[in-house]
Image (spheres, rainbow, N blue to C red):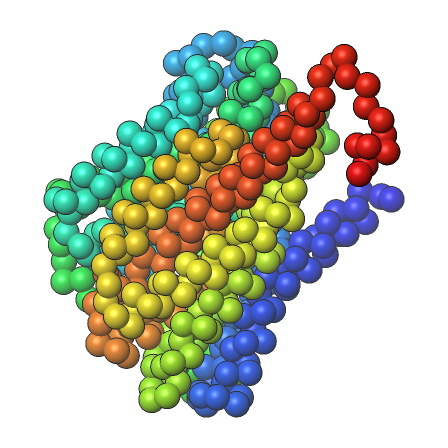
Length: 510
């Protein structure tokens, strides 16, 4: 197969995955609009066009991220390992973590939805948080510090800060931790972690490469909480993202005018990554022309995919989520909000690109001992529960801390009863589960419902990503508990006979 045909096949495969990611939401929304709650035709048409942009954008973006971010991360990790200079590893980890985070599509979507923090300020603060904690994660890999102790210490600090933080920042802070670990960041930091872990020769080195995502999710939470102590509160007014296009011509011009804006913004966001890559190529990588061109092409696909994704989300996709959420709060339809949110959550996780990247690494590092399918099932249950709880908060106004505090207490307590690798996988899964559909559609769905009900959007609707990041910590570690019990039973079964005993097979069978 020629290189062109191979690349074409990869793009088609990733677009197919994107279709399966968006299709459940598309089908459910269409059924609701046709038979349950009628909406203006303009909204539906804008949503359908936006869905096409989102599908194409996610497909191209995933191809680009995998063919550029993953090899760059792996090569950077290997290059830093060869240097054996701790200060250099930590500095480069900080710079790359911050640079990659700015380009994360989930963060871009969230930043534009937050009314009381300037978009650029939020992007920079969150990126610095990720950079600092990626450096910390690399230090943990090099030193072998147990992840459990870091999680206990930092989450203790987070909940201590929550006592002094304005509630309008609380949900945004926890949501920021979830959206930073998506299809852009996860392939990069996982590959980089594996590269750096090779500096150690012990048997736990590769398994310690898990936990990077979980630590990188903590950084933005702390960064936004600290920001809230110094940043003005603003009026905190949130309006649902609703754009009405009366004619098809207006709709076409809306997309045409939006494209140049996102072309410019995305170029600025990706520029630091490109510069860092070119510096490493000149100083350390020195790849041949074919490999160098392949990564540059991957960055190009990433750029084009991100532009299409952000255009589709902001012009047409999110708007219908707001309208639909508001419409379903009327009368008897309100009783279906929680089941509907859970149904959408179950399907959203099914084709999330970052989850697939994590699954592959889990099976690779565990040599198939930990099934990717069981992890995916655990995540589907977790996200369905997270969406249901999030909608319950919208309907009742219950504080996010009522769920986060006991949830993290349980998840951290479970870490003492399961193998360390399950704890690392669980906390990594919490980061990768909050993908583009959560930030692009479900957040707007919650905002629309909260606005229609007259609730406090900043405290009630925001926090959905935080719940999505929390629930896998419990469900995946429960899988670890089950695995530990099975291992103990298997060990007990093998110890029924001594080494010198003669075992009659028919007696053993009986």
